[in-house]
Image 1 (spheres, helix red, strand yellow):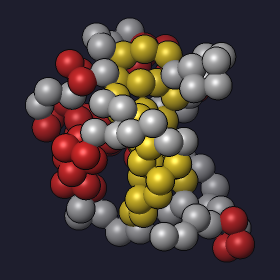
Image 2: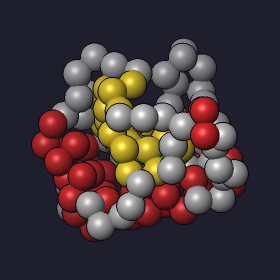
Image 3: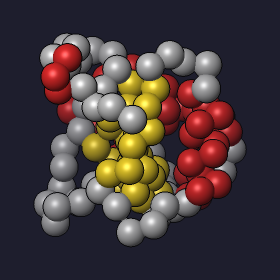
Length: 117
């Protein structure tokens, strides 16, 4: 599965000011990790957003958002945002910020479990 390189560049620009952001090829696409926690990813031309369970229903209520069914089953806490929901940089930034807010609530990963470049 390929990923939209233009969208990847936009995500990079949205997080360039943040420390500890790592890109990693995962799931046939590209994932972005903050302190070893994946927060967004790109599969084809859609943005995968890690919302967490509490924000999941609200995210699904937004236009151009659908359930993430990567494994064939809906995955609570993750959504796909299709390209029409990412037209402006402000739209993209809002999704990135939502995902970053969620992963900042997660406990740190053990040093041996951290993803490396």
